[in-house]
Image 1 (cartoon, rainbow, N blue to C red):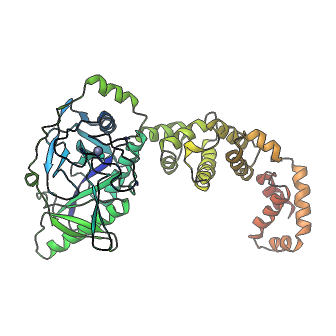
Image 2 (tube, protein in one colour):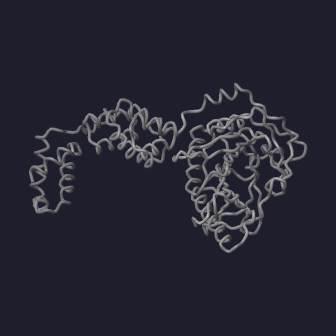
Length: 471
Ligand SMILES: [Zn+2]
């Protein structure tokens, strides 16, 4: 397969987070009854006038700024003409010659920049539902839902880079609260275009495009299966035809759908019902000020302040809320790696267990910090701390209070621990004997018994030391 060099560009459609559609006041709510959110404008009745939803423009600008794009102070809308029943107007309103933003980029971990050629605003189409009785039903709830389309230059070299780019893009979009970018709900769809060539010096090959991929897995498999398909064609002296490909979920590979349209096929022309879109400089600056610290920067800063492993930071910055919660919990903590290990293990399992996000927990980062300080000062051990964390979620009480109520203070008193160790050994003579004769794995059993007897309060370090000493 590495006989050929792939060249990949990616178009991504993202539904921006608005209450209402782009050119009318219908709701954008997902999952409601078919055709419950439609009106003469989004169903394309004659004689209606669209007007732009300002929130869509704000969110497009926000995304564009976060992606390092230049904002065009004047852009305009165009009609993209094609006939398909999910598009009752017979055309889609989009931006063609004059997009709202251009020339951005996303930087990959390797330092490579994936250039973003343009970012534009457009409307979504309706949805065809093909039911069992061979009837096709039409749901226009999605028609007129606002989208931004983000188009890269052909800078992506393989499926791994494509996934990294898409994950970074989704993270930035979520940090800025431009969209939830939930791929299962169709809020983010990727369309990679792919060509291959034998040599860097050759011209780019004929490209094909894979339509509407709605998971990272589909993007990865789709790109690799298309590179393989094209390679086989060239190996057999065939010619690549410019085609639109569909990814087959069942077979996990792509198949040609139709000959790819060119811009000429769509007969784009300026949308006569909408004026040019003008954005003033101060509007752009106000939006720029709303952009939070972005993941790349946060990554660098966490590395600098907390000195953590990169894998750990990636987990911590996976949502803005989680990273904020973490950062506040760490104020004043000295052994940052130990506290972070606890945070990643226990706080994240707590979120999992209760199926909540960081912003939905029942306690503040302040309490989380107090809990981590109790660990740091040796007042409770890690097992007890995990228990306290769970009670914090259940009651919302502060950790000091919970520790007192449950009597979880760790005892580091060697005399007390020694007493427990001695009694555990006398109660488990056989196991103690076998350990002494070399059955190392029984050590863990004995530690467990001591911890149990101390109700989890014994300092495990001292317990370990003591058992070794006595046996
Ligand atoms: Zn409508």
